[in-house]
Amino acid sequence: MNAVLGKLAATTQELSYYHSEADIGVYLSYCDFLSYVRSNLGCTKELNRWFSKKFEKGPLQLVVKDDKSRGDFVNSHHCVVQLNRINSIFAKSKMRYIEAHAEYAKEEAIVSTLRTQLASQQSYIHQDSHSLRRKSSELAEELKDLSLNVQKCLSETVTGLCADLAQLAGANILEGGHNVKLLRQECYISHQKKFINYLVNQLAAHRFLKISCQLEKRAKISSAYLLLKAIELELHSYLSAVDVRLDRYHSIDQAASEMFEEGSVDDRDSFLHAVRDILSSPSSSQAMAPTYVSSYGLVEQISELQDELQYLQHEAENVLPRERGRCTDELCRMVQTLEQIFGVPLSDEQPKLTPWPLAQWLEELETVSQQVSASVTDVTLARDQKAEILRQPSRNAQQKRQVFVDFFCRPGRLESEVKELVSRVRGLPE
Image 1 (cartoon, rainbow, N blue to C red):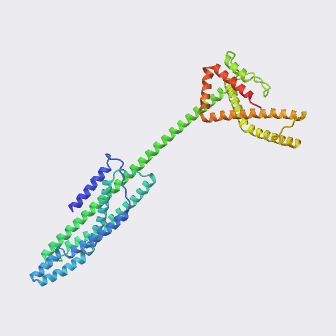
Image 2 (image 1 turned 90 degrees about the vertical axis):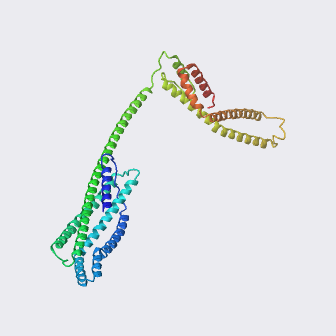
Image 3 (image 1 turned 90 degrees about the horizontal axis):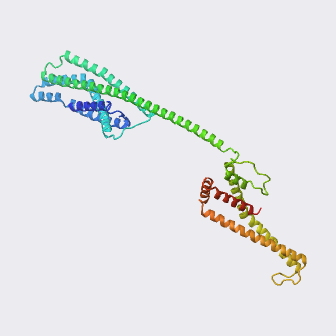
């Protein structure tokens, strides 16, 4: 009895410590009640076996055997009758006592299991709002059922025990056996007092658990509400920062679009005038040049010249080989035609007399072959240049940076490069 009361007191102290302000954030976890039910069934069987053995072979049986050993058959028979009468009276209270002890053993197993869980728990279990609400509703239903069971047991068992005690006090059922009467009364009264104390302690423990679970539920709901408020504030701050950044981007875009508008070149800027004159020099493809241009326009014209140069290089790499093959095929056909005309292959012997039209055709053929050789040479050079560019992938980026630096630091060098690019573009075949 003292050990059980000590365990209840220790459990109460631990729960009060965990639910105090010194350690906020502890969450009770009730799960897997099937294992508790199995253990409770085992405890119920053991308690039934123990109490049946105790009541069948308790102090009453010892006293009856003592009376039989003395040879008082009448008294022993009277005691047996009275004991049977007492057993018939207290059978119901005995079963209630056994059931209450089984219920107490169940609750004690649950409390001990919770204590081991709380002692072995290393970190707190944080669950979301839906699982917390579900757990709190389940706990509320469990506590409600337990409180109803306890109240029912109190209302039925305590009332029945009080009535039985009143019957014992009012009835003189052990007139001939004073010792047996005293022993049975003391035994049953002590047992009933212990049972009442057990029920009172169990009711107090259930009430304390109910209050602690309500406090825990309120703490969880308040913490979840505070977390949602913090998330809302963070989202508002993020949206305001995004709006400010979008406004900045719009202002920068507007300023950049205003900066890139074309305008006339300043008369005092001789370098920009020189670059404009070079880029707007008359050519066969341009009929007239613009009268004014800005620095951004000059950069665009330079980029257009570079694009045109790349296009011409592409033509030299892809179109000229096909033209060369076509010219070669035409030359072969012309040679075959000449062979058919003269009837003798040119590789065997040359004609001694060359007619004037044939000589003219041969001169034209030689001129075309020279042009084809020059085109092949140009294509080979362009291919070598492209291979060199592919070997150096960062050359274009370096060239862009160099142009940017030369535009502000060495305008003469940039002017010479522009002239060189223009001359190269003009020198390419159309």
